[in-house]
Length: 516
Image 1 (spheres, one colour):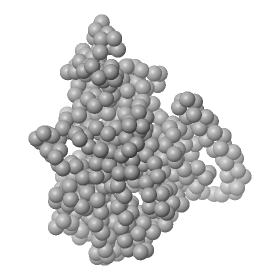
Image 2 (cartoon, helix red, strand yellow):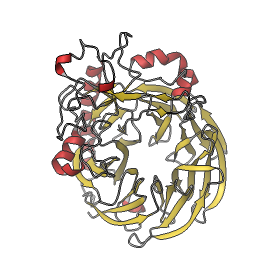
Image 3 (cartoon, helix red, strand yellow):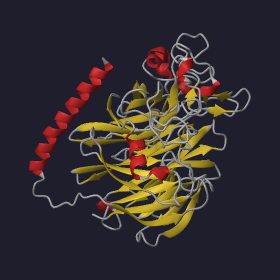
Image 4 (cartoon, one colour):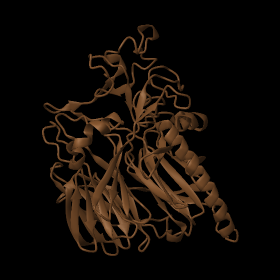
């Protein structure tokens, strides 16, 4: 029934898109806007060492970019009025409170999410004036604010507060979402306690609650937020839990949690390379499921329909204190059910799926101590979801297939060893970030950052359920794209659209320009 429902949704979406597309063609037939896409590297900024360039925000009023620099616990600032000659400005230091995680800009205001020195304590959102980097306000939010964003109308600032446990896993704050009402200057922090009673139902649909002695409210770890075009709703990725929550910003309530379910790697189009020790870069089907577990999500309204795009990175938990918690192991080191995984198939060999890392909390369906099903972290893809959490499109093994065909030296790559196939046993290319560029409401471009491959893939998503690949963006000295930031042509200092990529491991921020 679920597959049928999704198929009907996709069909309805395509029909709606084609109908509206025809209407748009008649309305825009006389426009002269250039919608061609050809992003080319222009410049790079060396911010510092590893961890010095995580997430960036851009202020079109001052032509400044603000970059999270966790190496120095500050926000690095650069004037890019001339993208060939960025000018470094005095940074904003937040080390007196803790470490910055995220930044966002709206109408001359910069919001900074800062975790406390004690990560389990309440965090802060600092708001600065972009013109002179002066502090305008500060707000107390939930534990470990990991992502901050403004609503489109600028009336609210939202923070995803992960609430991660301590190393011993003896203190585990609730995961929360804070809504800062900029107009009335107050904060509402929402927790997920209302969903504790729904835990069993949600888990049966593909949601995870698995921390030691944790209820749902404590176990969820809000990761990333995207906001609807009309600023009435927000969606929050709950990465480790394999879900997305929907928030009503008018009523300031969490309306729903959408379990994302699992991806079957045994079916056509979903094949993976499951081993880093098989001596070959090759995609095969295996009796394994992937958890979508999105990191970054973004949304776009096309022809009146809201679409949510997710980068299905995957994430495990590993806390090695006392008692701590380690949630993954390799297939070769667990006990497999011999009916589900016949010994003759030798699944636990390194060249098969023995090296693959799987979740330990899932798969023992009959509670007899062995694993009847296997669940890998992440889905090695990007997906498109409806506003109500229905899967409209998944890229399957498009990322791996495309990388193998066009840039085989980057396949499941590990930049530190400069070795292909290195991450096949884990989460593959690790799609980390997604960003959308709207070109004059006529063409929509999706950027997908691949953390391990150190690449960004560019797609045309004007038809959201049929993405078309356009190009790869990569450089030999930029590693681990953490943050993607698209700047519209009308906001750009060059008059052309820009893509700003923040690379966590190399500590660089690179600027690409659309030479259309």
